[in-house]
Length: 334
Image (tube, rainbow, N blue to C red; front, side, top):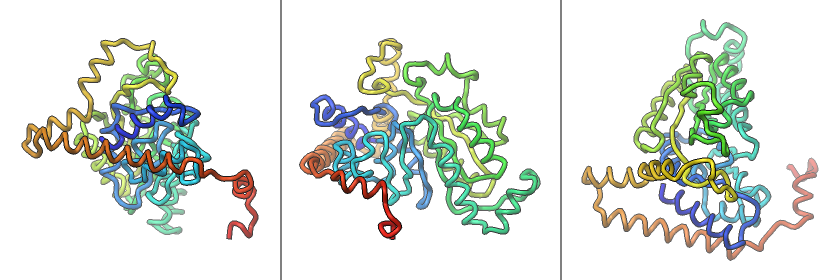
């Protein structure tokens, strides 16, 4: 969680200094929903994050130097500098990558789950599961699952509902992970969503749905573990709604005029990092000084990661290299 927080703070600093161009979407305040999910996943479980992807990417094991490099546009970036802040794939750690198109990762994660079930059950069993009435089929255990990460704003998109419906029909091993930070850009979820709890929509697709305190690391971790067990036993998809809050605006140009200072202060008191640190201190696992030492180590680590990326930021792909990647021949692909 600290690595995510300090990565975001350093990113904001680099943008303000004019060293990174384009835009970025920070997730300060949402660290427990990122870390709790990724800690609970097994090797081989895939994630498909949203455009607010930095924390999930870090918590899932990506190298911060490669993430900073991506925003600098250098060839060391996760997408060789061609994607920027919102597009950070890393297949080495089972991260398909995020997209600027809201909700677009949900059908991709569902597609991964389609393949995972096919791979786990075999072609004959899978063919049976997609042609017979799914309510009459016994569960078929699977080894891995995918996680479709989306926000409250994306929860009303048609592609999300289509994916949930298909995943339920075919009992695909996908966790629909709704990170509800209460705002789709400047639009309050209270005004834009027809139901009080997005997780209640799960019932319409014949899958379990659960509401979780997204600022409580342990609560998120335990909820994901519970969902993972259900999914991997072959029961089909699961919907988790993780309630959290972004401290920053939607993007770096957002002045947050649509919400009050009182609201922001109320959520600042529920900072997931401070809550977890205090809980660890109260339980006697660490001292206040040890917490300060960990904070210092993480901050210094992220400063070094950014420095390494900045020193190599001018190492960019040439136009010829990019053209060859886009228009690759059959020989190139070999």
